[in-house]
Length: 498
Image 1 (spheres, rainbow, N blue to C red):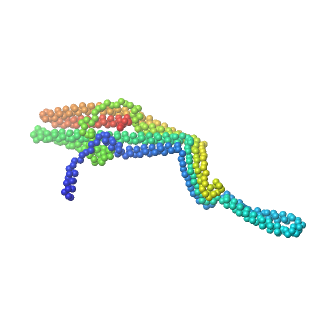
Image 2: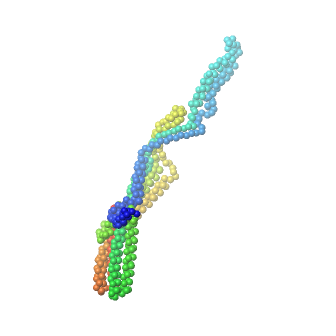
Image 3: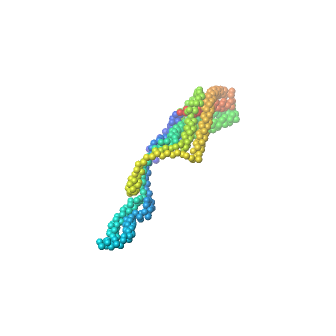
């Protein structure tokens, strides 16, 4: 290791670790930034806001595009096989019939007529040949025409292409869309109330932890002061034992008190370390970070203050938990309205453009062609065996339950507010009594020390005075913290924890 690096390490190790000083407000701010549940609540607010925006779109027309292709093994045929055969041989069948009929007619002509016609060179054979020369081309043309008709009726639907653009506009949905939008608004409000509940819980927890650390720090100083007292007394007794004016038994009694004081100080140190770790975790700081609280070194942690006036209605209006329950009641009512819409008519306007290949708008053509369409769709429920009615009854029952829970919580909040006001008043009284006891304990300890130095009071009496002083000082710290915590409890009960 180089000398320069060694020197740097020695300088770094010699620099004292400066503890960060935190106030209650700074702890609150860091806790609000660090709390993961608060972050979850913020995301839930964003989710509720997006759901509200989504519900608004139900009032607007919706446009959708459809497209598809289908292959089938057989095509749709408008003509059966016999009809196709008849149309394809239309000329042949017609000329054959005419020739057969002509032959039957010629058989009915008298022989005398044929003899007279024969003199002119006209014979039955020549007549039939002449008719054949005329009818055969005509039959071929009719066959071609018939085959054209068969081909024209061919659909060729084995390869089907289709597409459509559809527009739907709700006109009346039984009030379901209105109720859905109200539910979305309530959901957004509920998310905000949930976040406020989590925020107040975070502040309540950080306040309690902060004042617990302050309490343990003051008790640490008290335990150290008590240890110094008993050590001084132990030193005085040891000198008196050496001079022969005190017994070994008195020395052992004081030594036991020293051990008890050291054990007390160790417990307080452990509790303070653990409490500061919890505070750092809540604030989002490293758990091993050295922190000092602004109220650790104050002489008085709290002073008595008059309790606020009792206002249950204000507390009920401020408590986010109560607002959340009211949101649940309102949500249940809107759900009932949505269910009621199942028994009401629903009206939709529809429109769009449909295209297909092959199309049927000009025969069956192998090209894309389409048509515009506009319509109205009406749905009227007629009979569902009471399904909607039962659901509405169940929803109304859920609303009744939510109202009962709301009333129950309102009563508990009233009780909590009354108890918190009472606790603030009692904490103030205890603090005044603790301060009076502290003054008496200080005077008692001063008198005992003076008497011990004068030799008129025994060490046992001094130790009793020291114990009484320790108890009085500890009760004063507890009373001061009790005032602080009672005020925090009242703020939480009133819903005014900021």
